[in-house]
Amino acid sequence: MIGTVAKLLGLDSLIVYVIIAVLAGGGIWAWSAHRYHAGYNAGSAHERIAWQEQREKDLAQQAADKRAAQAEIDRLEAELQLEAQQRKDDQADADLQKAQAASPTKKNICLPREVGRAMNRQGR
Image (cartoon, rainbow, N blue to C red; front, side):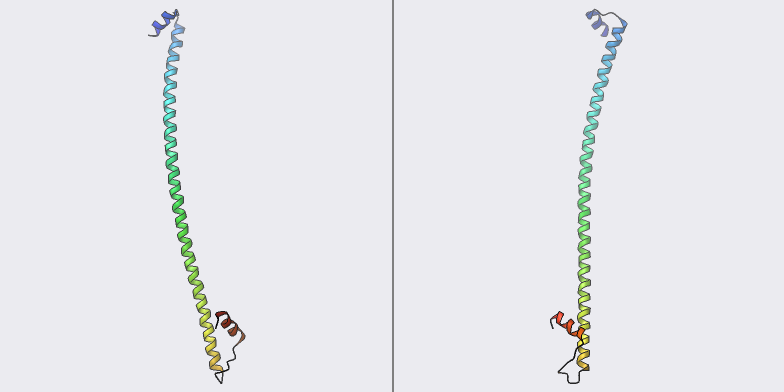
């Protein structure tokens, strides 16, 4: 086929045959390289999208875990504060009972200053 094209063009040399063969082979190679890179780019884009979706899911899961852990920390802190306040209340009640027992008339109770201030804070 190359020979026929060369004779029609009036080019009857071995160099012409080689040049035409190289151009034909280069065109085929360039076309296959183009198709390969197009497929590679499409696959790369698909994988990037899948990776981004998985990353968003992982980040959402981490955020949910973090919120759950913070809620547990807040709950434990509230319990600790409630227990501390109950201990203070119990101590103030014990001090009041002690002051009442120490009072001879049971009507006029002389409370220590700390006990009186603690009771004022509690609203008693």
